Image (spheres, rainbow, N blue to C red):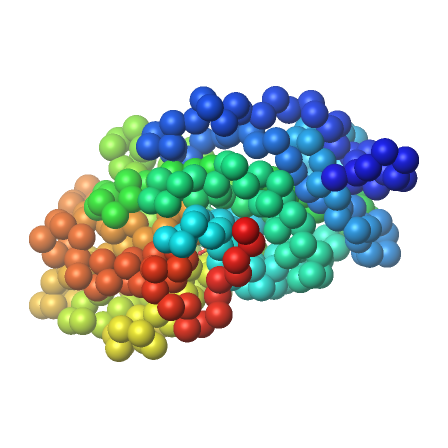
Length: 368
Ligand code: PLP
Ligand code: COI
């Protein structure tokens, strides 16, 4: 936080500190947390100019950002984000999960969108400082997590569709509960009409512009009773990902994890594969995944549908998928209840993140 007499940072001049009213802590019902906006008292960030060098990060009272209408982010979508969680552990301590991996993914996306990549040190320091400043908003164990949203925004002015020369890095946090239904099966619809990302496009970047095109078909699917959509590749043959989570299935005891050059390289996906292989002894097939294999159609008709299916992500955690609709027909997986492999993977990851099980991978960092 800036102290009296200290020269203010560029970040402080972009934020209007205190212009967002924090949600009073006493008004939060931890048992009822979902995935909607709660404003916490503090946020942090830093600004880099044309040279791409960030100033030291600052934590300020939550506030709106001053952004010129000519900002690259507003005109041309020069923006991306990350998603992470801080969780209260069985020992009462608060842990972050895989900070380095999130920092690295933000940096590679920044490179693609010509934004200034924050160094891992800057990323970590800002995240840790903002989590510590809002520590009272970390939900109790078993009641959710503090969701961390690092943003990278092209805040400089440009009229030409080209890099705008100034990047604002912002970290805000807020408590969240379940994104879907926790460890309860959801139903998803396979999307035939729209693709999420172009084959050689930027689906692998957590670019802000990848998300808005999903809103319209997803809203329709939700109105029809589905939790989300499963997007396919440009041929409509291979599974890409859910709008906000990667996809996996279990068949004959093996875990099949969908890969594609145009999907997000999920950090939960990577963690799931390592836990499955290295801690549970499960065979992992990490490759493009045909929809026919998931549903048990075409060449896979004799084998039948997957025994288990789930999607995974920071917000989605491990969300079991009990059924899928494709071209008007419903397919269900296993007994319709959460399968044993899904349950074991969930339990391992949850155990690592909360300190209930040893973190043999060195993924967690205690912040408080
Ligand atoms: N796919 C998309 C499109 C996402 O937005 C996310 C969420 O971050 C994921 C997958 C899962 O990624 P991660 O596990 O790193 O959160
Ligand atoms: C996440 O899981 O962190 C995401 O960013 C997904 C979604 C909420 C957009």
